[in-house]
Image (cartoon, rainbow, N blue to C red; front, side, top):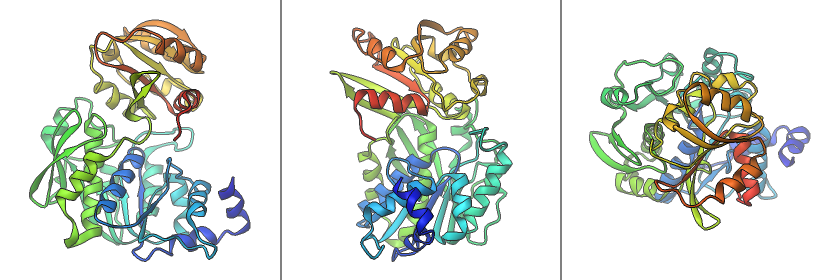
Length: 383
């Protein structure tokens, strides 16, 4: 609400605030991975002694950005930080593009995502192109994403991505709307991934990186953050500091987050589009015996998720959320056994947590954004 009001009464505030950082503005955008990549980049820069302003809790639309700035701004509208690293929603970032200039823009990927907002991938590509055009120094792009690879920003371009071997171990790809196998050149490359560990080659050196959550998609986020940090810090970039910062980082809430709830460990896995659903399901231990899946009102059309192969789940003890029936239908058609369908997320959650400890692994909840918010609220967890 504060951001909405200020944007109405003082429309110049956002642009003025974004231009006030001595070492400039960094913008992170794309279909998926924005929150994690932003948090990774902030962690690396902070470890190098930089004072960084960022937008917490994925406040990545215009009123959220303004509210985040207001929380830290002095009476003169200035923020005590060296630089800003801001996650921006693709659509809002494009709309705001005439209000900012960025020292560096980092673009994660283009996926088939939010089809009620973004009708096709080319529309997202055009939005990200407008954001990239605001870069004055460097645009860091995912070199494996064909739509991003076709952008032609005026700023210098640096790339990150994965090796052919890493890609081949993801049988369904990495979820980009279009993938290119054109070589990334001397960019930052993920050369190996195993669970929460990865090897990333930067400047010819192979770095051992601990990830905040399991999966090649988190390794790609780390590669993007490392590539951007190396550009921003120049000769001051210290690989040891960077990898230590990543190892110490906790997940962005809901993204592979493991927390203690009512005396037991629970893993939260957020899925936001078919690609993230597939990549996260592929990382689940097939022997997990206590899984709950919840789909909420943020999914306008549940058929959007039908291309996802959920067979690795095997058995979902609870299927919940306002779209529980539609989700259960998909799971049943794919041979997943269902224990109970309970649309009320709070009721399903309480019953799920009351079960005895699992025989294998830990209790795991896979949810969409609306169900995530309801579950975290019911548990009294802050963002």
